[in-house]
Length: 370
Ligand SMILES: [Fe+2]
Image (cartoon, rainbow, N blue to C red):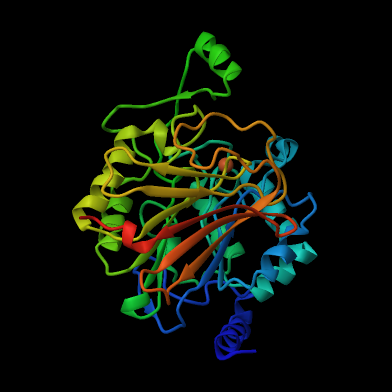
């Protein structure tokens, strides 16, 4: 075992007091630099039903990642449980079930995890700021992931967003986890007739909301994000539960809030934040998108979903880069090749056996505001 792996394992054992060895590195919300080795391999995924087979976890561990990013839908509630006992009791039951899943327990002992939520683990399907029990849900989520009692995410305005930084300045990687639920405005739906027509072409029931007051992130989170993007880093992962760069498709994504999406792009321009790559989940298939309109540089978005289930009929996405989608259970993997003259990030989607299904290399030098 090399020194880096030894360090990780020692850190893991130090974290056992938290019940599960998560949140080993970094400090919530302030982007405090942590004295760990350079990040070289990051796995991620989303959408996990506790009652489905969980054999994907060993395949992810076999890739030997430094970190795993859980991009939401950690658990799904049972409709009958919600009706009988309410959303919070139903969520608590599912967290208990997942924490007993042997493969998942083993994975948590092997790999540090940073997590954000999406709708199913936040509360109710496709819910946002108006979910009445979001404070109770926040506590459940953070308890499940072993957050400390004084973790800022327990009390800060705007939700559970946070960030971490790794490595020396020359190889600095920043991991930003957004909260796309806590402050999100209601979704706008199409008319019944439009919905019927749209579904025939694979579109969903939602339409873009051009109201300048409509939000995905509330203003507190936006201010925090701008500060984060102003910090020095050569590579930045923006973890958004729902896709950022995908073209409009009528299901949940940043495309439903075009002014919010443009606001994000404008902040990248303003802060001159280099090295941004988006990671996302939620959609129950894997794909790679790239936004090239009104951007300072191409904004790649690798979407991986789900860990235990998938959707066989992907919808349209005008920004899809690789024509095929990954219509099977999958996870994402990022390799950071720091030692090249112009460092490269390799984006991958792998299936539950670990077989490579999609791969794209991006030079860090191509992710700079000129
Ligand atoms: Fe979701």
